Image 1 (cartoon, rainbow, N blue to C red):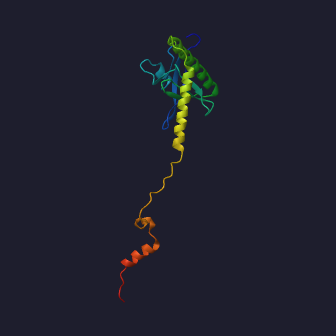
Image 2: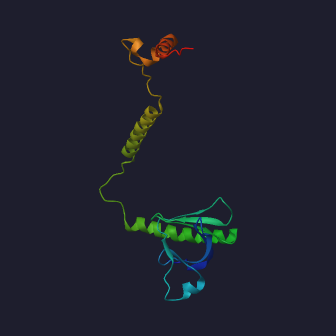
Image 3: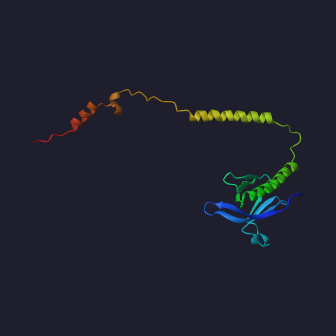
Length: 185
């Protein structure tokens, strides 16, 4: 890959909530299209240590963060994400530019190595039409789900005196009076 040379250096890598940011030694290898990292530079230079992580850059998206001027992320096509932080804005931009160059090279290589199937015509109109139809169906379903349920009327009771809610206070009082026992004085 002409014009691109390996690039390396220490960056902070966000590991998890418990450990937070950890300094790691990163190596960008344009020949393999991989970003690898090690615990430190000594480990990276030792031949008997394997990288702690390898991130393939074909199809990767490299994006500066809005958090601050030093943070950026590398989102690989395999779903892995490295959240990284450089020591300053200039260093961040250097890493972002180099990572993007390698990613773009390997991504375009995929398209070159796998041309579209012969004999197939673009079907953009039908795809857009299907998407539009499906979107409208989803909107209709969402509308149905968010609509208030229909109100239902209680079923009529043939004999209202048998219904517990229809008892009046005087009915209740009569039943209480029948059950009272008078004590002689």
